[in-house]
Length: 301
Image 1 (tube, rainbow, N blue to C red):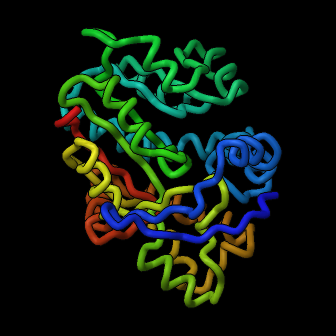
Image 2: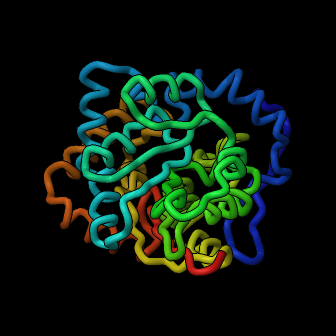
Image 3: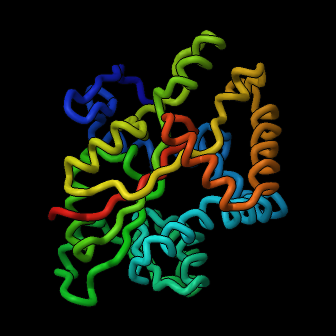
C-alpha cells in the first residue's frame, strides 16, 4: 500500500490537476505488480474491466453495452470524419475495441503492457504489440503506409507521469491531419464537487498512485491545443454523480453501485445512438458527464 502523502496541484497553463509529487516509476511499477489487480477484483478500480473479466452473463451484458454505446460512438465519429482506415489503440487491453473496429471495416491494431492481455488478444488473431510505446515508435521510423490515420487513448492519459511525452510519440505515428481520440475521467467537475459536499467525504475520484493527472473538458482542450491539435469533436456521458445527489450512495455500497450501473445501461440501451450522442454532446458542452471523449486533429508536429 502506498504510504506517501500527496497533494493535488493545478497546472497554471492548461488547468489540469495532478498529484504532487509525481509518483516515481518504481512506486508505480510496485503498485501495479502488487495491488492493482486485487483492487480491480474488489471493485476499487476500473469497474468495466472487472465486469468483463468475470465472464458469463455479466461480461456478455457489459460487452453488449460497450458495443452499443462507447464503441458505436467511436465508429460513428470515425465515419463522420471520413478519416482513413488505419487505427492504432494505445493500451488496448485484450483488444475488444480493435476487434470491434476490425469487424466494421477498419485495419486496427494496438499496443498493451500487460502480457496476459496481449496473449488473449493474439489468441483472437489480433495484431497487438507488447513493447513500450517509445520502443515501438523508434523501431518503426514510420514512412508512408507506416503512419496511422487514428490513434486511440482510452483511459490512458490520466495514468502517465509525462502525458506530453506520450503525445509527442503519438504525433510521430499519425499522418498529417490524423486524429487522436482521448477518453479520460471528467474529474473535479461541478457535479462531483456537489456530490462530495452532500456526502461529506473526501474526493473518491483521486486514486493514488495510478491516477496522476486529472482532466476536465476545458483542461483537456487546452492541453491538446498546446501540443498541436485542434478539437473536432467532444461529448460527455452519463453523469453518474446524479445518483449520489439523489441519495444513492454507490461510493460506499457496491450493491447500490451495481444497481446504478444497470439503470444507466437500461437508459442508454433504450434510446437511439444518434439521440444519445446528441444528449451527451450537450452535456459535455456544459462540462457534465463522468468521462470526457475528445477528438483532436493533428495540425502541428
